[in-house]
Length: 341
Image 1 (cartoon, rainbow, N blue to C red):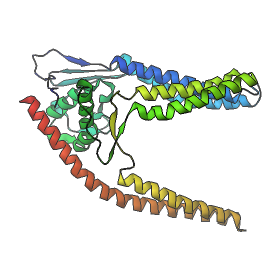
Image 2 (cartoon, rainbow, N blue to C red):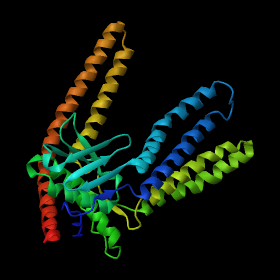
Image 3 (cartoon, rainbow, N blue to C red):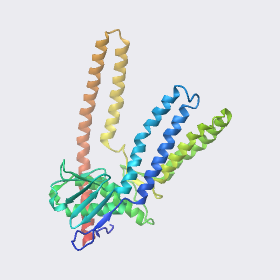
C-alpha cells in the first residue's frame, strides 16, 4: 500500500493546489495532430481523382466529421491552461475552464462518485463537479483518499462501485510505476494483460505490407497523396503502442461480463431474426402501409425481448459483482487505516 496521506485539512496548512500535469497537454496535442492528419488525409484520398467535381462534397463531409474529436482535443488544451483544484481549511475551490466554484465539505449534503473519475458534490442545480481524471495519477489517489476521509460517510453515494472500478486499479497502476522491479500480478479469469507487443503483432505486419504497397501504387500512378494512408496507420499504431506502459497494464475483459455476453448473443440472434422478417415483408406483395406496420411491430417485439432478457442477466451479474466490490472496499479501507496509523 502506498502512503498518500499528506493532504490534510488542518487550518495551519498552506493551500494545496492541484493542476493537470504536462503529460495531459502532450496527450491532447498528439490527439489533435493525429485527428487532423487522419480526417484530412481521408478527405484528400476522396478527391484525388477529381478534386473540383462532386468529390469536393465528400471531402467537406469527412472533414466535418473530424471536428468533433478535434474540438475535444482543443477542450483538453483549455483544461490544461485553466483548470485547478485548491484545498484549504476544508474549503474546496474548483477552477473550471469558464467558471470558479467553492464548496465547504462540511456542508455537502450529497457526494456522488462517478465511474469516470468524477465527484459530484451537492444535488443539482447547485452541483459542483470535480473531474479527478485531469490530474496526475498520484494526485488523483491523494484526492480520492482526502475526499473519502473528509466527507460524511452518509452522504457518499456509489463509493463501493467507484472503489472497485477506479480507486483500486489506480493504486495498482501507481505501484507498478513506482516499483517497476516488481512483477505484475497474474491477470484474473475476468482480466487481460495488455502490452505493447499486442499492438506490435498487428501494427508491424500491417504497416510492413501496406507501406511498400501504397508507395508502389503512388509511384506507378503518379498520385503521391495516397501516401497519407500508411502515414495514418503508422501514426495511430505508435500512438496506441506508447499509450501502454512498458510493463503492460491489466484491464477487465469486456467479454467476461455476463451482461455483455448475453447482450451480444441477443443482438446477433434477434437482429438476424429481425432482418429475415424485414426481407420477408419487403418481398411479399402486401400494401405499403401493411409492410410499415408489420416492420414496426417486428422491431418493437425484438426490442422488448432483448430488453427483458438483458435485464434478467444484468440482475444476476450485479449480485456477483456486488460481492467483489464489497471485498475491494474492505481492502481499500484496510490500506487507508494502515497509511494513517
